[in-house]
Image (cartoon, rainbow, N blue to C red; front, top):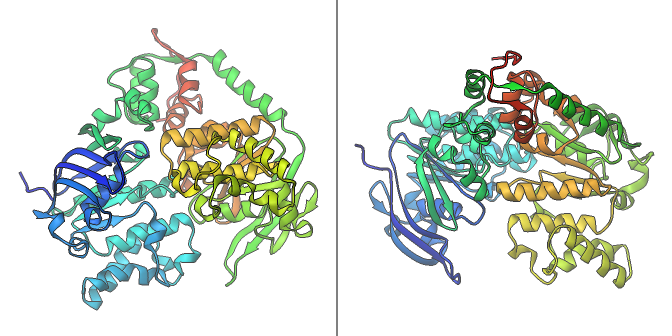
Length: 574
């Protein structure tokens, strides 16, 4: 048996000033050629464990450190972070903090230059690493001009350029479109081609971990399960209990008592047919009827784009010929690959951007004539990163900020703040510093600050990024509640299960144009068209598509399934 690249034994770590251990009782070996995944809810200790591998814990983050962490036999407590960086590459969860160069290629070159790599070899590494993540054509671009997903790819490329023996990635797919998620984790297969390298990934997206050899499941810093990937992913109820999203196909078969449950749509089709299950057509028809009733309930147009174009400084045309209508009371998902123009599009709805050609009308009037201040009364915008939106020292002052700008009376301000905080379940935290809250908590503060202004339309730009499964559901349940209370909700997302479960209608953007739009069930049935935009429906949708009856959620497919007798009406599209 080969010597482990990473050997962790009895690790316990407590941050300075904290009472509860961030990690406790962690023992783990990672051998050359292995892909080990670390999963768990927020505050499980996943990022802390990643920081232990390259020496940031205990050298940079101070605290009580017990046990051993050894990389290639070297104790991390006896090596500096710089020394360990030659063998351990770490892609941070906050990937933007990793970028500081003035061009993409300089960013990729920075690490090898600091390791004293020869000039010709640096050139080869730049080409290899940028090519691996699909950024070879953007060498001269400044990182600040890239989309969030492109920045994430660049952070990965800059670490890959150092050719680490052990690559540690902390939530590397959090801001990537579905196809790019798979592309990043294909790195695992490439690393396996190197007999001396291994991969350790912290991840929320369980479907992307089917390539992993083993999974370590953490809760509150303690190991709950560690074993082969298939075994851990089949523990559906445990994953749900801990706030980790289970696989859709596995959840479906587990709910119907089929064990061992399949892990993929392809295996799911075979299992469905082997058991002779069928689809109850009357129940499926009721799903379609509910879709039609929802579509008929849509009211007048609140936002209309006609021939919309937008070009950034330098001439890059991010939007071209966009025609789109958003109706009052809808819940609309805007999806597309990284850099497709999604955020550029929705920023036109509240005046953060103005058209360079064409028109955007809100409530029947052009945005260019209304101005951003007046548009802000009608259309609220919650940014992808709440930390770009929050700056006050207390939650109350943050939520009240816009209201004070508009010179409302203090009594009305207090009433609106209390109402908004109650809506996002943050009552009682008025005097807390927003930055002491979790990412999900800060996201809710940002939503409350928009809610307090009582806009008709709320735009949520990637509202689930960086949140665990339970937090993602909490955020989207809040959005649904606001929608049912009368708000028009527009959300940008890469999480296709969120699209399936929460949107009434989907707008697909590709290369600055609308590729397609329509009711969610109809759009997600078009797998080939979605694939052309780097999008992939969630597992349960892909399974049901192959069965000939499209279900958006596990609950829908369970409700429509007839078990216990053989049926001949199932259509397979394998």
